[in-house]
Amino acid sequence: MKKYRIALCLLLVLFITACGNTTQSNQNAAGGNSSDSPEQEEYVLKLAHGYPTTSFMHTFMEWFNEELQQRSEGRLSIDIYPSGQLMPVDQEMPAILQGQIDMSHSSSPVLTSFDPIWNFYELPFIFDYDPKDPAVFLENRMAFSKSENGGQIISQMMEEKGLKILSFGFVDMFGSVYTTDLDNLVTGPESANGLKLRTPGGMIGPETAQAIGASSVTIAGAEVITALQQKTVDGLLTTPIYASQAKLPVKSFSVVPLFNSVTPLVMSLNKFESLPADLQEILVQTGEDLEKHIMESVLEEAQTAYTNLESQGVKIYYPTKDEIAEWEEATKPVREVFVNQVEGGAELLEALE
Image (cartoon, rainbow, N blue to C red; front, side, top):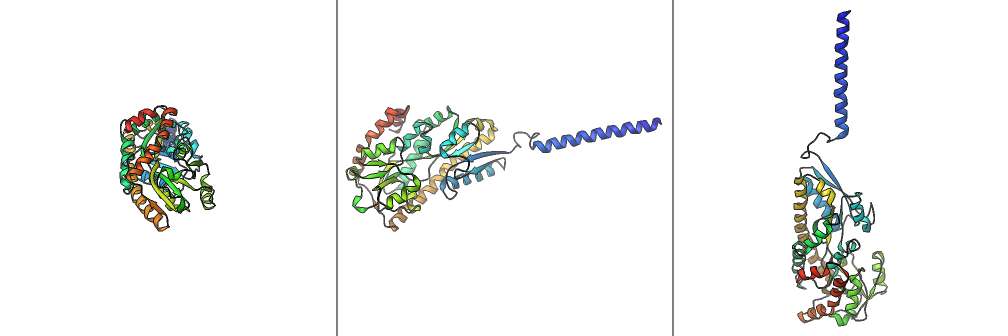
């Protein structure tokens, strides 16, 4: 009987131990990486943007995601939600701050509603350019965005509001004047006088149109082609890659930099700082390399766009040095609006000089 009780006790001890091990195993399985160190844990970031999967806005994020996964050995990746699946583009920054998403591939026109300092990139003639060499403009815009007293000032302003800028990208060249009729070919600011132009809107677009004597017309993006076909407007301010890919019904393109939108990759600062230090470094470095990848891709596509526009029957007008000087002089009042209405605007323009 005594032996029986001893055996029963041993069995009970073994049973309790086995149950404890099983419970611990189940807890580990349910918790995933609960016992992993930060060097082993996997992180998946949620990114939203409002553009189709065929656009640079999306393909650049696919490149970024692939690079992150490779450089982090699979510890860091991104779930990308394109085409406004999660929210309208104007709600992305609040969603980042509220923790609904971690990142967004946004644009300076959209960001102007979050902070008017982004209107800087909508100003005309802020970067030196060569009408016949797209690389000159792209390099100058990128140099400013990376400069300590230029784009990095904007980055610091965004960090104070809880946002981390990982890259100052772009998906096109500068915006220029396009018209639907060769009779309205714009060679200088005086020849734009009286034209009705669809502009990107916001604070700066209408001011730019007014500065060259044109009137600004607001038209939804989905209605632009119809408005051009029906001659509701005489033309628009837009960019060459978009004009080429969308096959806009235009007949002329004047190569003048009237706006210069950028497409920053924005991340929650709280989320960024919550990651292990090595993953933070990978994000920063990959963001810098993304800018190089963007430069090569957009330059190649821009050169193709110019050729495509000509093959579509669009006359490209390259202004002379004297005409460029006239454009710059005519659009100076737009800078004054920016300085007077945007806090920190004067400092950015000083850095530009």
